[in-house]
Image (cartoon, rainbow, N blue to C red; front, side):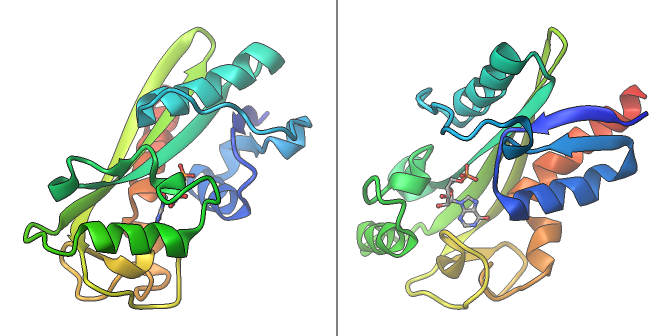
Length: 193
Ligand code: IMP
């Protein structure tokens, strides 16, 4: 029988990615699959705290094993901003264009353009809590390039590449911070069997 695990998201793209990595041994349920349609609070102030808060919410309300992710873009010259506030950097509208404009403005005179995307995946299995981290290092360029991806992808060039995350297409799913964190989760689950 397949082991059931809830992934605390309704993002179809993330679900597809995770189901592909975890393969046939796990039945990954979305929040819609368990009839949870309201937003889960994310008030912790760190990626680790928010990921855990989401997984704990599902565990407490539904009694199901669950994992949740939270991601931030951390820019060194801005002391880690926008970080946990990446989605709403320019306000509650979650507007990627406005977020990028704000970041580019703040980076205007900065010489150090190094940044990283960091994803934390929190897993609650029974009584146990496990955290997995995925990082992709890179630089913030001065103007947008590329049509693919989402969020800050058009202004982020990953280390070892000359294209932005919005230009590299499918390759992004192999090297991304999220893919790396999920791969660690998958390794952990497979080694437990
Ligand atoms: P979430 O935790 O996956 O919802 O990500 C929070 C915010 O980080 C998103 O709203 C985006 O602004 C940004 N973000 C997360 N992942 C990516 C990515 O792969 N590329 C670009 N931006 C991202």
